[in-house]
Amino acid sequence: MSSDPIHVFDRRLVRHRRDRAAATIGQVAPVLEEAAERLLDRLDDITRRFGRALDLGGRGVVAPRLRARGIPFVVSMDLSPRMATAAGGLPLAGDEEALPFAPESFDLIVASLSLHWVNDLPGALVQIRRVLRPDGLFLASLPGFGTLQELREALAGAETALRGGLSPRVSPFPELVDLAGLLQRAGFALPVADAETLPIRYRSPLALLRDLRAAGETNAAVARDGRTPPRALLPMALAALPADAEGIPATLRLLTMTGWAPHESQSRPARPGSANARLADALGVEEGRLGERAGR
Amino acid sequence: MSDITKDAAPAGEVDPALLEILVCPLTKGPLRYDRAAGELISDQARLAYPIRDGIPIMLPDEARRLDD
Image (cartoon, rainbow over all chains, first blue to last red; front, side, top):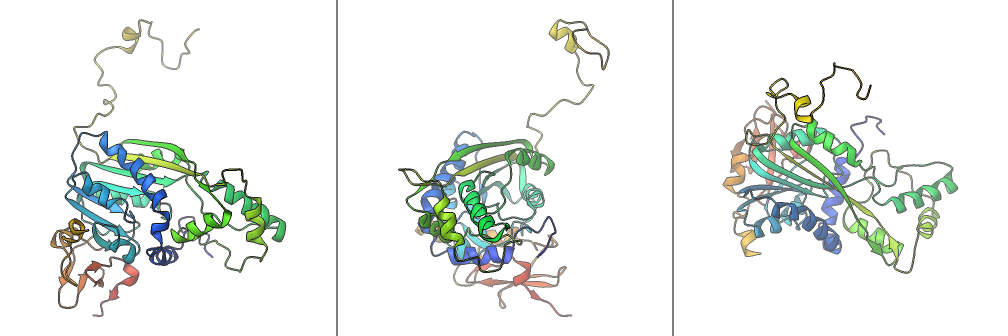
């Protein structure tokens, strides 16, 4: 087990899970489609036309929608070759942590719920920005902190009771505040990050686990406990999930980020000292000395 | 599906428009397309990335190491 902060997820295991899930991904298509629709809705608010798109980990719900919006060239990359084949664009297997594209290859890159198994998200964002043309758009959603919180708490409670200790069983998710900063540090212009909540309900706890497995989204944390969990862990945790008349809640907190590859046509802050009017004049106040407090 | 598969080249062939933008994921250097072997070769990284069923596998740990 590694304590290297940048090596949180086992990428081979992620690839294996996605390979296996290629046959069952249809089971969770409604959730993936809903997330993709919400993400690609943002394109409809933009007047710019795109001609060359990269679909990262779209699992068959992103590339067809990009084509339907009139984008002629769509490439679909996935860590799993099998998943890439079914994605709908020109397929290739590749790793978001080592993108195999020449600089400025695309003017649109979309990652719908696909970057949460990436170890080095800042590094991946820098690479994504480099393969975008100037004024190209990066559009991504990922599950944020709060996602599957009900399951996380139920598993933690059961494991503490049975073993007197905890191991990570639900993947760690990023916070909203992290994302805009990451985009900015990766060199994106006009970075925006926002969050919304998709309340998903399951008829039974087992249906939730079945879907996570079908989606290839079960635990791939390097620090996961490799031992067979106590037999009572899962039943105990699942019984502890909050349930009401409508079923078991499984919250998906959807974080969305948009950023543009820098281009001179974009609005940007003026250079310091380039102003030709005093702020004090505009505000109709007397100019104070630097560091002096207002209202004295 | 026809509008999606029309871009797919015959078995083993990779779409030229895709080939044109591919680089070595490690060095970001150019790749040589060895059509006969079905490989994309990065001379800088000394790695050959396989093409399987027309799909370039651009994963360093799936690549064949080139011996000198």
